[in-house]
Length: 332
Image (tube, rainbow, N blue to C red; front, side, top):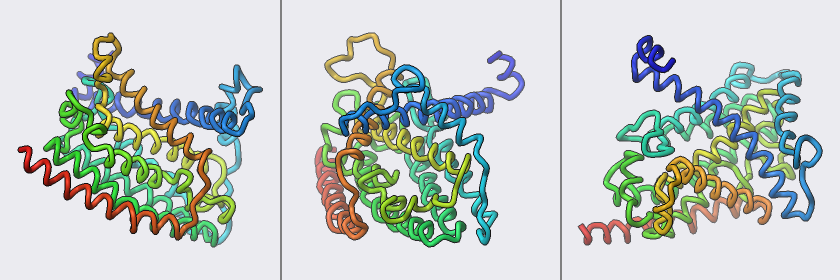
């Protein structure tokens, strides 16, 4: 089958088509698993069981919820900007497919190994904020509009320190190619060489994905549901899928940039474990940490959120960049 597909489409196009189909499957399975995991982690943190009724330990609950969302009516309120209202849930998925294309899941499991892979990921990640702005603006709802405005302000504030700490990795690896960054961590992971950068990245990535305690754009206690207040059915489900897909993307990028990618732990390199298992093990360990933080810390106020970025994160990231750029210059 693969040979016939290569003959018909050519090797590059065939690999892209198969890769996109695999990404679609990964996105669906990832969302189903993470929703179940989040409910279970939240339940245990709050001293309760979480979903238990549908399937063993409630493992089929998210499938039933997905069927429910698919069967619900797509309600479009009056006075909305219909084109933008419909387009926003579609635009929110553009970075999901684009970013997964260049992420190396193992030494051989990568759709395209571009020499500007890091640049592509951060270029397309801005579509997420754009989609939220479109949805909040088009809904003609004051709560949605406030959520959209907050999302833009938060995205701008936390994108700056995020990019500054990634620059440290690019300077050290001397490449924007994802596979080259992984190879540069053959001896020492970047998380050990620059731990402050790894912590800043994880904090900013949590803010970029609108996860608590940085879930200001969809603060239920203040904005009902924020930018997606007026969305229902599958349109709401697309925003929901994009949130959990973006969690996987930022964790996968963190694994690639700071935690050695598909490479095993230095003291466990003799174990016959495939690289893709190491990669997803590290990625989901980071996601578990993000979920744990959500159900442990309270939501920040909007002024606290912005002050934390502009007064603490950005100066810390700038100082870190200057210091490590000087160290790299002296070493080389």
